[in-house]
Length: 128
Image 1 (cartoon, rainbow, N blue to C red):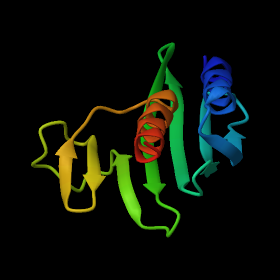
Image 2: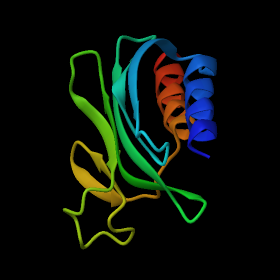
Image 3: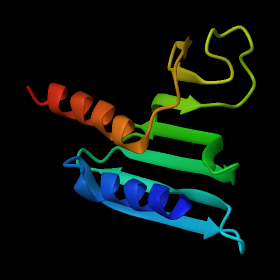
């Protein structure tokens, strides 16, 4: 299950039209029941996506215990960040939420594919 998650993760990055390069490290536990992923994805407009995910296998299900997708423009200013740090208990989707420069909003945990699609929509919209 974890290996499939990693394969899908790698495939999403490799197939995204907005990814220029990536430097992703994966640390699999000796028993193969947990993984820590961290790294950076460089995008075609010189923006950056920092990623951190900790996932475990529990009762045959993959559980994303912690995650952070921090997207920054080419000047390294935050555009948005999705995470599940428990620091916004008033958000309807607690602990999941999305940071934007001026606010915090409810959000579900996105997949890497969804994040890259959201970033792609921003990049391609700014080109028109």
